[in-house]
Image (cartoon, rainbow, N blue to C red):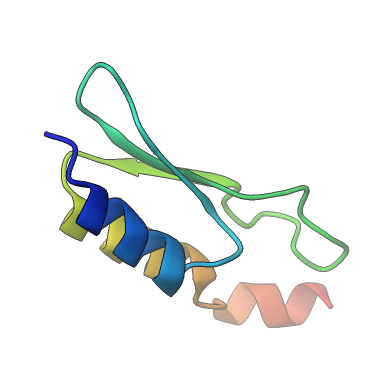
Length: 71
């Protein structure tokens, strides 16, 4: 269920992402366009809960070792 506080907290924590709660009850975060050096990074993530979306967004924001080799 949509909780405006959850959405506001996610927006504050991930300012580069658009936070969406779908009519199907799913949470989404999207960003973009991704810039040079961000190839292979997630432009969108989704989850069943705000906590799950927070986890997925953090993971998408965390550079992987392979990201550093691409630069």
